[in-house]
Length: 331
Image (cartoon, rainbow, N blue to C red; front, side, top):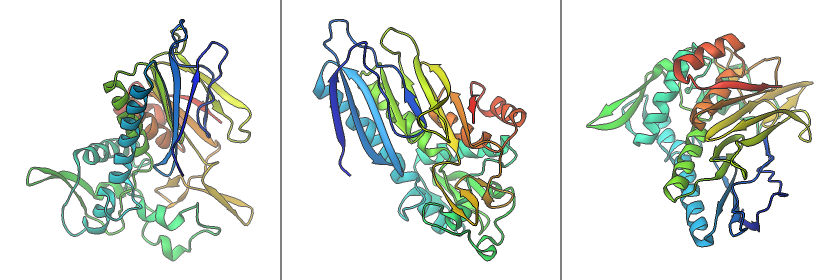
């Protein structure tokens, strides 16, 4: 799938519907009243989904360079933290960390340490070591649930305690002390990638932009009139309907839900958000949770953690590891 670039003149009548999935952005980036600036957008496949980026700049070449840098950050994070590549940090750790320390990049170590913080704060409801259970379910490729034998030994809390992040010869390294544990950063790495992309835009002088990667969105700067961005949250049952609207500026919002990656079998729906206690999809009364936070990594992890937690437990976890995080919508 090739990159798609679209540039258009920005004016007050424009409506920017950014990305397919959880969000609609009913505003546009800041535009010069002289009409000299352009909205520049690009969509690319990355991190198992589609990234949609939009920014405003009066120099087309500079805008493209900023987009190139942001997209490269997303690809670098994906290359290091996906569990689907044997040569990624996560792939190498899952292949060898139960036997010996595996050196990883500082970025991967940072995300792993943040994951452990969320695991401790949620009592293991957020667990970065559910890779074997995630592989067994793999809902985008299955049409029937895995057999009980495939989940043997995985249905228990505390797998995250098998993960040790330390150093080896002065470099970040990881160890896994349980053969049932395998790293899966699907609930946090995408948000970290968005943060890295936003930082790249800032370093290129971009002040107003949106980065949306499969339900993890960061709103940089303000909309046209200097007001916060207005983000609409789509209904999990009807993508033409909104279940919430929020105004954000220099903040992130992320949504976790059971409605995109799933399959049905024998009248029941099985989705990708797993409960560590059962090694099976979480059973909840809601279908989506949206969280706002200062960074997209915290919003991503917060939404993943809050899906399946009662609001009070989620609030306690947020207070420990992401005090500025807050649930803004459930559906």
